[in-house]
Length: 357
Image 1: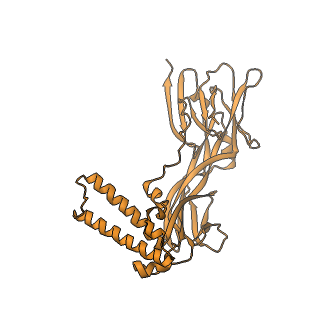
Image 2: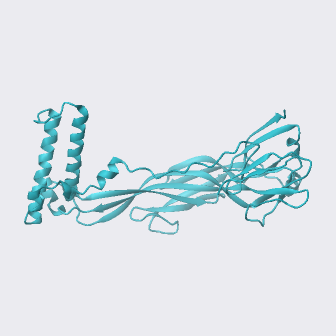
Image 3: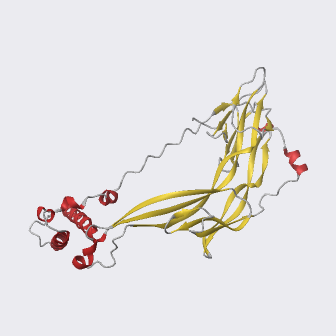
C-alpha cells in the first residue's frame, strides 16, 4: 500500500485524541472543514537473534572412514544441532492506538503537505515525498552453497560403480581421493605433465580438484549442511530487572522463555529519567492546538547470560518520554515550515522555516 501524501492546512490545526480509533483514515467533510487522522509510534524492543541450524548426514562409507582415510570419531547416526552466532537489540516504532490524533482544517488557510507511513505514523510536513523503499531481493546462491549440493557420484569412475561390494567401493573411492591429492601436489610444485602456465587456468584446475576431493571425502566423513536463520523477538519496554527474554537450546534452537529446555537470557531495562513526566494538570495545559509529537526518554538496556554481558547500551523509549505540540503559529501564510519526524520514536528530527516568495 502506498504511503499517504495528504494536502493539509495547518494554520489553525486542532489536535484531538481519538483513542478508540484503530485505523488511520483520511476524510473530506462536507462544508468548510476537512482533516486527517494520524498516529504517533510507541517503542517496541526487538531482540534480533542470528542462529544456525547444522544438520549432519552420515556418509555411505562412514564405517570405513577410519580404515581408509584415518578419520576417527565419524558418526553413523544423523543428527542436528544449533549454534548462536549473534544477538543484537534495537528499538522499533509501531503505531500507538492510544495516540491517535485528528487534524481539523479550517478555511482561509494555506495547505501544506503531510506524509504518513503506510502504518499511519506521521513522517513529515512540507517535505518532498520520500517514496517507497526498494524491496530486497533474495540473495543469490554463492559458489560455496553450490558446492554443498554437488553429488559425489558424478565423479566416480566406472570401476568404482561396478564394484561388487560397499567395502570394495569404499576402498576404490579412497584410492581416488589419494590420487587427487597427488595431482594437486604435482600442480602446485609444477611437476605435472599438464601444468598450465596461466595462473587463472591453474586456479580453475585446483578448484575443480578440491571440489572432487571434498565431495568424495564426504562419502566417508558425512556432510553438515548449515541453515542460517534470523529470529526476532519483540518486547514492550518497561522497567524490569533480570527477566527472561528468551531461551536457547543447542538441540532445539531459540525456544520460548518458559521452555526449560533452553538456557535463559536475561533482560534488564532501566528508565534513565531523561524526560521529566508532567503532572495531570501540566498535561492538560500542554494540550495545545498543533501537531503532536513524542519526546522519547532514554533507557539502559542490558542483556546477559551466565553473568556475561552480551548487550549494554542506551536506547530511546517513547513510553519513558512525553508528548509536545508544534504550535499553529509555525504554520502561517508568510512562511513555509518544514518538519521531519523520526518514525521509530515519533520525535522531531529537524524543523526549518522559510519565508514564502
